[in-house]
Length: 212
Length: 180
Image (cartoon, each protein chain N blue to C red):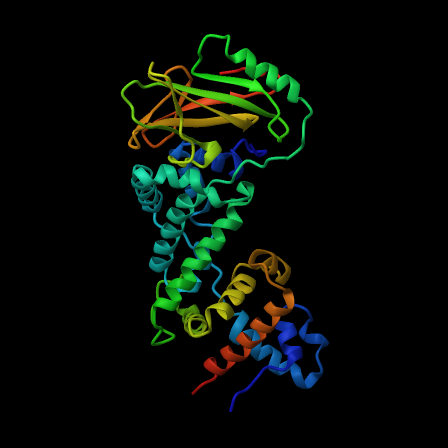
């Protein structure tokens, strides 16, 4: 026959009442319960072997070295929150974009513009790749999707370009040539991504409007 | 940095996500033992706990980008370890409640405590025969010393549900420990 503890005894086990508060006929049962369950609990600390750290880090480093790890970290990383606030600077944007045609080409150029997002800036990415048949850009702004953002060839001089509206902040990116070769931007600073590659970096600042 | 000068969990997580893989060792050192006792009691041995903590750590690294609250890495890691323990429990058949409990820390085996040692071992064996959910709430409350409210917050459940689970665990333990 299944025997259950009296509900009041369970409250004693839960620490919600003392044995002395129980009716006398339940105190023996409560003492039995404590002896069987609570007094027999082993609370001694458990220490794992010293080699655990090394073994974990060895596995972590192996994972970090895999080609997919880098992309996976960025794919699974929290996205930058964006605040959709209309900013009435359309005229300035058009003016700035028109100005672009009269300035010398730069690898990455930023223009404050109407983007539909507060603190966003148009950023122009350019890469000189005369032999490429296809160039894309992947970065933190498109979840490192190597196919999401193609560049367009400008005439026949080997220059590829795309203009994106990016929120303010720092973005890392790289170019992918012909779908397989990752190329850092030769005119932008780069950082080690911790996985054996270098990422180009662009800092978007809507106040200055133009920062590399 | 906290008041001791050690980097916060949040800053370490962000550094790892930014590419500084070696910083992950800080989190390993910080949490390798904190939940080892929980894992040992959930799985019945220190060896099993060690494997679980290692696997959970590597899994935490792999999915670090999904840690939405880097400053609460500890709570997030606990849930990963918990899932690992539950998966191990599902995978393993506990043929006997006494199997696999020898390596859970026991008190010093002096003669005067031999009797208690037997009682401890009996309880550990009985705990292994609870459902994973019942066992967990018992371990968190009576081994780790958490309140029902703290457990509820950690497991995203209600105090009432936890109490119901625990009270069933008390009855089941009585049944197991008083069986002839």
